[in-house]
Image 1 (cartoon, rainbow, N blue to C red):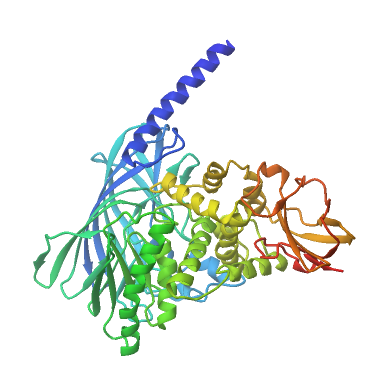
Image 2 (cartoon, helix red, strand yellow):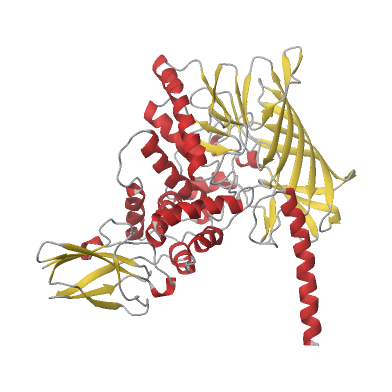
Length: 598
């Protein structure tokens, strides 16, 4: 009986892996997991925008392919614009959290009916048959007429009406700089389903997660409006009366964004052996700001080249930097940024948002659950890019991230990085966790495994997981496969707990050096010893549970087993001083005990 059970289990596994191989074939990448699968969508939309009322009508045909091994009895859509209504969860959360985002505050609660956002679904059919649905805040709950079988594709046809809210957060009309339409997360968007189940999170304040697929969008709008965003503009532009219809096609993306304004200047610049860059900015900017947008363009070429070299090649034929929104926010093939900035600020925000193309729009993490993987990794690589492109000359471009994390770790307000993005008690704690601690995760990983190994691991991570939905374990497994180290301890302690790193020099007796571990998080140690004769020697103490040593020119001594809080070793000569982690690659919460001088 036991053998029969094992045979049956293996048969089920083979069947499920067969389904996953179909998913991989639709999204070809180098997969390390033969049982990986992901869903697929094909959107066709026809949108008619009234620029006077800020309302639009939409027809959406969506072909959904269930590449999972599961039978699906329900589906869900995101209706993000519904967040911009008095009494929404975003409104309530903003009015009850201790430190609300200043861009939101209590503004949603004061919106009038002609200022709110909404998406109203008028009809929905599955393979031609009308089905039941209910709008619950920013989520459409759909009861299927017939379950979707594993491997099956179904077609959903939807008619909807919508209204663009006044600009409050990310999306909206007439932002502070006068951009007419910043159209992000503006259409009924099918929720993601993966091995963890449905991800139909309400839109409360954070970012997004979407299904990979292809988009075909026809937008009818006032003929005087200049439009830029996701996808490739087709040649079949049609004009009728005061309106024109633009046709965009976007392959292999998980979102579709556009912005429009009658006063946009549109510039282009070609990246050598790369994409065409588009720049959309208001003609009403003053001359100095418009000159900054001109100067931004060659810098964006350099940034595109930097990221393609250090992460992986940008795979699309165009990218657009668009004035709009309420700060800076990444989207597929484009970003929306506020444009009334100094030149340095303009380059800085573009560097960060462009880097998100890799760490979110190609390596498409779930931003609600693992926001630190996109914000933190983006901050890391954009800090290095800015250091080179802007000739900043920083010895350590990540130093501010360490400073921010150490402040949070000592504040008493830190929550683990595994906290859902909407469930942080304080917005400040979320921001420092996602951006600073997320950046430290990657920078400190370079300290653990060696900088050259980190560079290899980042490229392997991209090669293995581009056009997929990587999880935290995936960056660690990429690093492990580059190094043959065991690194799960690093992921667990730094992301799933608030354990801190604190090592100290306890005492020095002639040649004997006594160290102590005070914090709960384990680390290998770089130690520099200065002798009484003025010479120095670098030592490397491997962490036993890591099962390996990073490349180093230092003297490698015995492993330190984490459970032992004390460690002693003999130096080669009489010691004058001992310095743990002199280059400050560790996020040690108490550096005062790292140095002992006799």
